[in-house]
Length: 305
Image 1 (cartoon, one colour):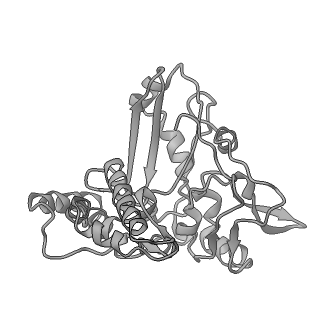
Image 2 (tube, helix red, strand yellow):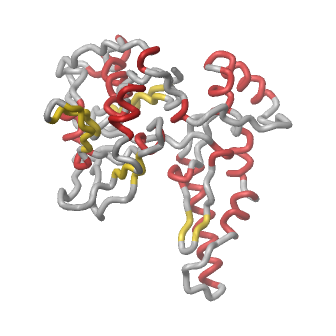
Image 3 (cartoon, helix red, strand yellow):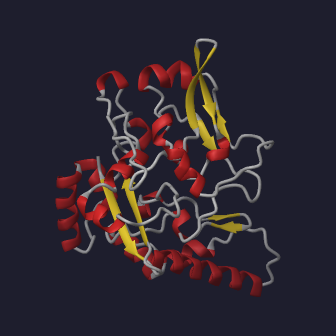
């Protein structure tokens, strides 16, 4: 599967590291969390981490489809900007400058509307126009085929395509499309190999629940569950026999479990654990899970991140 990683040195002798797992993976037994724990035992990473203390943990889904994957940017009374909208240059794997520029363009659109007498609530179509006339659009257009090439041709052929594409500064006379959505890529469990992940050593690698504790995530327990199932019968009736219910593994926070009650499997949602990564909304093979906004102040509270 296509992956990436990072390790940044911070102040006070701290480091921030992470593993990025492309959600187009096909083996339902893949656990991004456990892949990350295994990654930390690589000699190069282990050498940096040894003697240190784990102080924080978090997870999220990265929006990296680029220009072709941008949603509608303007809605009545609001604008989608920054990394949440998908203003990431995947060729450079950089997004801070593009996110900032989208915010600047949004501020210009809002300021102009207010100066023109707007009372708020309308759809600011001028934001899209400003975006398309800026260097931000040009940069994303240059990088538009990067992620799609990896998905369409595979890692090595895709990388070769990107190299040629960038020789022409991304000015190919076509735009690639992803061959299929991430939720359709899983193979049946019967045709997949189980992955034997090493047991965490408690020094470099850790269990999921103690990691979630460090995310400081919290939700009021008496609120409605913000992880909604279109059909409550699908996890056990379809996903379990076909894919061994992959939500148990793709979720990096232990939100989804298959437990036994009265001798029968039951799908359990521990919404209190949710770190708002939204992977379930993307990867569930039946597209049965919808992440909705929980009550205010709920969710993770990341220190030093």
